[in-house]
Length: 239
Ligand SMILES: Nc1ncnc2c1ncn2[C@@H]1O[C@H](COP(=O)(O)OP(=O)(O)O)[C@@H](O)[C@H]1O
Ligand SMILES: [Mg+2]
Image (tube, rainbow, N blue to C red; front, top):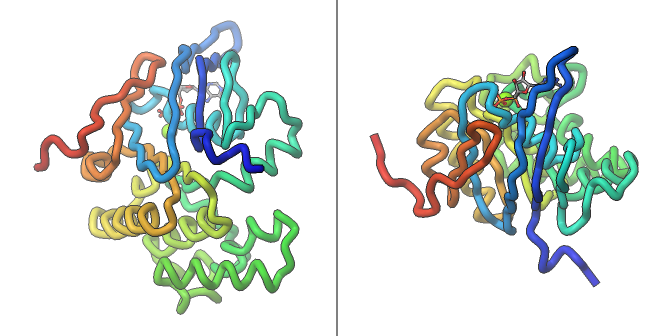
């Protein structure tokens, strides 16, 4: 029986995070609840330094809350050891960052295959899955290229393919188009939208881009350590 079927994809309860900075403590997340259901596309906006990256790190189990809980597919990270947390993350979560974080010495295909290899799949299975998703993001003709031989937009497509190759339940994207020109940003945005529809993968996207936020099904703002919903109605204004 799958316990994930009736659980939110990601849920946090009373999420709190304080960093010790020498003599000072910085209370970045001040205790809030948040959940994302299957197939949702959530945008998170907020000033620089407001705690958006900290939040994504908690949601993906890369860092641990000072207080409160994060559950992925109903499983509470705090009850798991490091190996189990890694497995939960590998199974359910994909990450996309502002800078692609691809491995320079490996080809696009090898980079995208990596999450499957980490899972312990065979090279053949990993390569097949990587080819399929690279095809889907329009980059099959670049599979043998290393990141240095790709454009910024292509690199971000590879990073998206790597996040999606395992068909995670949720992609956590931290300003994924922040480093791209507006035309390229737009094509990445359209790609994420269509993948969200086709693959029913939830997206949580931190963005400064108002257009990107307006395509979300729900928009949240991080402010003063709290996350609050700004809109559940979709776009209220264009430019
Ligand atoms: N590892 C850390 N140690 C100490 N302070 C941190 C750490 N990570 C983030 N912070 C602080 O937490 C606050 C929020 O940072 P961050 O989550 O990166 O914000 P945002 O992504 O919204 O720009 C900042 O004041 C930052 O200095
Ligand atoms: Mg950030």
